[in-house]
Amino acid sequence: MILSTKIKPEIQNFILQYVEILYKDVLTMNDGTDPPIPYQIIILPDDLKEMWIMDNTTKKMIRIYTGMEVLITDAPDEEGYVKIVSDNIPRGYAEIPLKYIKQIGYN
Image 1 (tube, rainbow, N blue to C red):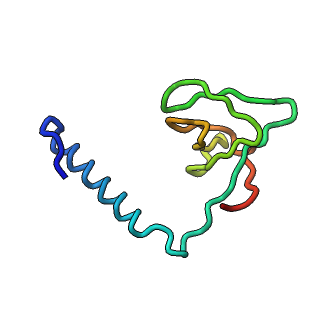
Image 2 (cartoon, one colour):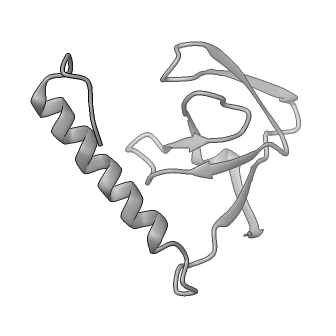
């Protein structure tokens, strides 16, 4: 792989290591031993039809609504918030209280 000479060598090395990790992950994708991916949706209280929260990556407001499919990316923090990704969050992730996320099955 040839990278531009305008990129610092340490950044080039980081990119190459990252690409190698991704390549290995693709080659060893689900061989039947991986656990199924949870199917999770947002369930807001009845008095909330939607909730606007900030996308932490783009710093733009995004709409969260009941029935929206999400995937939790890490464990809850000390305040009970989890990072989620979704098709409705195009360029990043958001943090919402874990109490609004329900697991309803597996994909």
